[in-house]
Image (cartoon, rainbow, N blue to C red; front, side, top):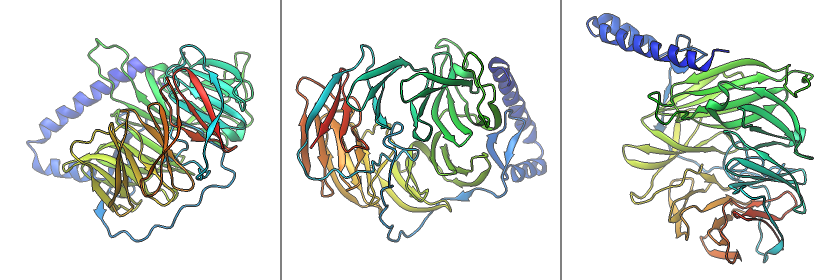
Length: 448
């Protein structure tokens, strides 16, 4: 592996040489035209070094408006594994697999969380509840009994229900696998550049591990600003082999992609990885082969997918802040310009099973149909509201001290008021049918 500081020096030198080449090229028009033509077949990703740009099999596809036909309603997955990561699943669409219904809900139990946890997400699977905080996690059983707690490095927490594990970056910058049963460490291994990067995606497919890492500021007074994203696939080994320190010695890096940006958004559906960066949307397989690229003038703010790999993109464009619905072949089925005075939270678009999209702002929530038509807009009481959408297309929202729900018509209903408390996590519907949500101090379970 290339040492981080050596890599940065290498990258700066490469950029300088490229700029010099561009300057001298301006005096030879034929050479410049040839170079421009060649670059149309080069992706802006590279493998390990800027000297190894990824070559595309075909040029980028321009994103073009297209007439949207009816989109069939999605079917909630049977035997879904619960809420496995922030924004529920790999597609980041905040869909939970259970219906909310019209019943009244009441608090079944409430438990204090550990001091200093400050929960931001509640995850659930295999009769375990996992509260993720800023730099700590806490594991509970299904009745709210605390089992274990530990530190988080620069990552979220990701549950692997198939192997009864959860993954995170530890305080030393290693990717750590811990058991859902008791929170104990199963194995650790190293990702590119360690704790100098934060991990936005850690997903295991059989014996392969997909990791997306974004460079973070390490020296606030330094001259080098963060400007690198890395996608890597590691083969964990079959069987897995660890040493006495739980280091996974069987892990081997298979492939990687790098790009000079920190504005990279990643979501996954099956074997398809979708990446959004400035002016581009990429579709790759799990060998990180780029199969297609979509191109348009935009800056991505957030992204999610539906069940057919359609991309719901919140983007800054020349027209303002827009919501796009894009297919893999470059058809823009919907484009909706958001109000100029609307400030949005950095939450991936919430996509209901009927393909209505919800955008949470700092003072309102907007419901936009698959054709781009505004269905309704409703005020919110807090600037940091968070939500999921249920299998019966209801939007379940944490809004300050209230847990509320909006039905398809936008009718607001209060499910529970938490006196002298403020919710800090999105609610989730657990695999057992309860609502789980947390404040800074407590974990709550609601039942009906």
